[in-house]
Image (cartoon, rainbow, N blue to C red):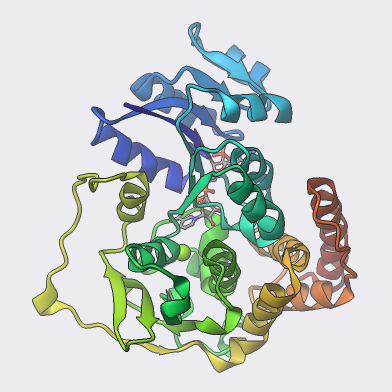
Length: 383
Ligand code: NDP
Ligand code: MG
């Protein structure tokens, strides 16, 4: 029996992880959860899975509203670190959204445990800090972002990444597939949140609509697989059936396919020597109609920023990520139009001088400073 600590338990990935656990109760036990504010979902998880530990910063409020006498409540960063480092915890799932997930990844990287990584922002912002730490402490980071889990599966069993010629990361294209930048001028929040294939949290759904998600994923992939940026190609595949493709130097291309359901990469991430059984929608190969198209040319500027970050280091990723988080929040709050998300990113990115210090404190400082800059840009262009 493996004990799972689920960070971001009340979110969309959290829900999929819980579904995989509940289908495999003989193999996995939910020992702890962490979340931010969503008390009603957390209470249901506690009732259904009986975890021992709950991490929530505003725990007084939670305790007042609930009657869970047997639970250990924790709050604050040092208790998050203690929780992650408990001997009882075997597997840590990092599924907090946004930059807020970085500190947990930082603590997790030093444990030598298995880490299921959904929180791409922590690698975009902290790849140069986290990856060497994970290597030093022998922590096993297994990606559960669908594209990265696909690459992970396509690479497994191979001796060396030097045999890899190309890695194709697929993108659904989101709700605005085939829209040009000018078509995006007047799209609404409701339209942007209406993803055709995936049901996800709001932030990643907007990232998917702008295609910034794919740029974050390019940086994430560069760090996770330690491959040159030029090896990666971003390709639009509207059906979201092939989650990524690895082409080897002998001419073979290996891909991973499944219906778009995050429980598939999560089950793969949890598997050891055997695959974890789950219920899933089988692909009907005789009716599949798969298509591919180029990443839109009018989004090359944003892709080039991601490629620049791959080559210049993750402190530039901190700036990119923070600018994007502020831009997405500002769009969701109605302060800027959808198409202005790009402008906030470009203007903020070009303004910042980035330090080479790779400490967590420095990353936090760059993040804070960038958010201030990005908010100024938002103010200057807001509706
Ligand atoms: P959601 O918004 O659905 O859930 C986010 C989770 O993080 C919630 O549990 C939320 O708690 C918690 N959280 C947010 N901020 C904080 C904070 N400051 N402190 C503690 N907990 C916090 O996001 P998703 O599940 O969609 O995404 C999670 C991560 O996984 C993201 O990095 C995303 O990019 C990545 N990912 C998601 C995919 C998906 O299909 N959803 C696919 C691939 C990657 P609360 O509910 O209380 O606010
Ligand atoms: Mg993805």
